[in-house]
Image (cartoon, rainbow, N blue to C red):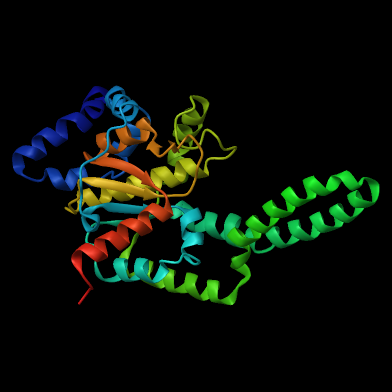
Length: 297
């Protein structure tokens, strides 16, 4: 009897396929295929994607509105202050046809790490430096040259992150959330179910996330892949995928070249090519698309 039950998972799909109800079974465990890819229970074409990365091969021209797009937490924050914010919101609101995926992990990371912490970090850092600078100037006047360099860095940080305190920025973030709520799909994988895979991938330095102490980047990736898989499962068509992130760590990309393991995982899971774009490139692609297609009706 025990042998019979062990054989049922392999036996039933074959019988159901004959009766024409395979799709019902395929959706009974939507995360199984993703687990297989992430845990290497199925092969990925990593050698070929490594070769293409080393050769610097670029993917052919693809229409922006036909590319499945995901957004990372750091981009979500910077969108609110981007010079092309209006174009980006208008593009997603009226033009984008393919999947727009928000990994669930980025929502809490945005609030916990970026929005909450960065409201004050640039300001407090600048104040602390001004106090430190005054003390050092009294001790040694030669500190002035270093002071200028550090002051420049502090000003740059305030420019990049200080805007979060601005009321207009908060209003822009609310507009972005409103647009995303209407257009995007938020995707999560079960955390406990994927915990073991996250741990083993970190120990083997499998991207993304091996440069971090915790597993946030892994769950951003797993949530994004889950969203792609669900979109394909309901018949949404796309041949290319992009994750928009300004994360510069090598477990995502190096010098503009996406990590070949990530490319291979997307290819194995949904049969599509994959790239990582920074926010500025994404904004340029939107402007180019608008220029080429004309104003929205």
